[in-house]
Image 1 (cartoon, one colour):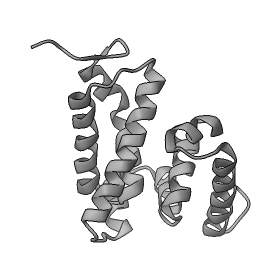
Image 2 (tube, one colour):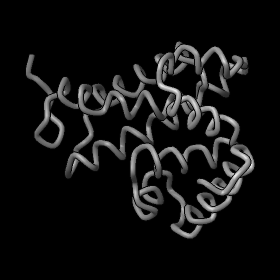
Image 3 (cartoon, helix red, strand yellow):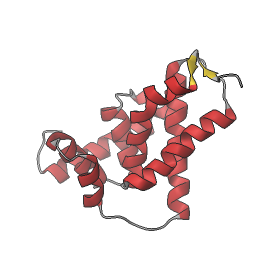
Length: 161
């Protein structure tokens, strides 16, 4: 059996390199580690089985984020159960208070803002890149970022965002 390659990287290298990104996207969407693991797995299974052609490593990363977001949306439609945010946060951030504060605040925002804020601040994507990843206009991304920041200010109770 031949090994699959994506933009010059083996499947294992892609999983290793983008594991944290896909996990972060899934956790931000689902707020539950076990559900996020299911979508994480499905995302990489799709990569392996569909074997899309990629132009670059950034193209791989963007594709994985788009697929992870869709997997999570599909999972939420199928499984309408809710898990308290506190259990997710305890599980994810046991000893890093800064991450806990940021994640807690992100979890309080609606998912359309949370996705954009996460991609911008945690994954360090620019507006143009986020626009391509989630399939909306750049001005829409800018508006979502602006409104999302305003929500975070209210959550934090200050102007430090």
